[in-house]
Length: 349
Image (cartoon, rainbow, N blue to C red; front, side):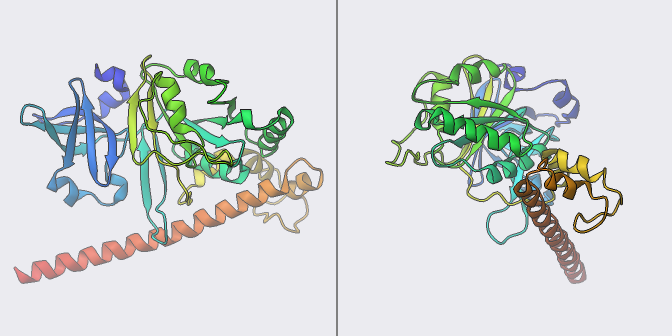
């Protein structure tokens, strides 16, 4: 394949500053610190150089699926060393699962994110809002896929669509059934050669089955659904596949935790109508409680703004702000510890 078929364009070429003896390659898989990279010749395993690990300031600097990297190939191009990661045009990241306050990079350089929810068991507007914050923060265009439409009635489906629009979500929606084939052609025609897409959603919503439909073969393992219609988890690592017509698709395991960290821009984009209403309040510092002339409170009273949607915004903003303060405090402590180590090492010389 040519690098342009792997998504390389002029923007990335302008960022490339690979040293002599290094080649551009794209990370196509990451699994527990192990990497696979791909260039014109094919895919090979890769590892990070010691210098890269030493100079990486945080987890954000580590390669993830979709990254373009400068790689040095060894032993007749049978494996490679990653020396550098090119700047990212877009990214997916979240707060690390658990109590650790840090970023976890998920994937990079994505053009469109397909946010997948099952109509049968997984449909949740509040979780959908979290996904949209993550996608908008990373400068990625969202498209919603409602799967397993064959398991609900037309009336139930219309109610779900109404709930999405009532939450101020304007992204394109594609109704999908892996059983009947509804929507699969629409998804396939939507995807363009050389563009990178990803599938986001909980385990068992039909992401892997959809990829097999798009590939036209059972290339990826799937498992039978449970008695409730809920699928069973199969994807265990993030990896990029090339479809027959040239589109690039990143599959990834379902995410149970969607912690929000430093997502100010993503919140503003995902809740744009709330930001617009706030700008019409009488006072610039309006807290939207009992102040006179509050446009948000008026919109809720008039039925123009769903109160649960507004409460979701407040919850996500508070979570993002709290995690950001904790993250900045952590970074200060890390820097202080680093200075102390350097001082000790200098004193021993």
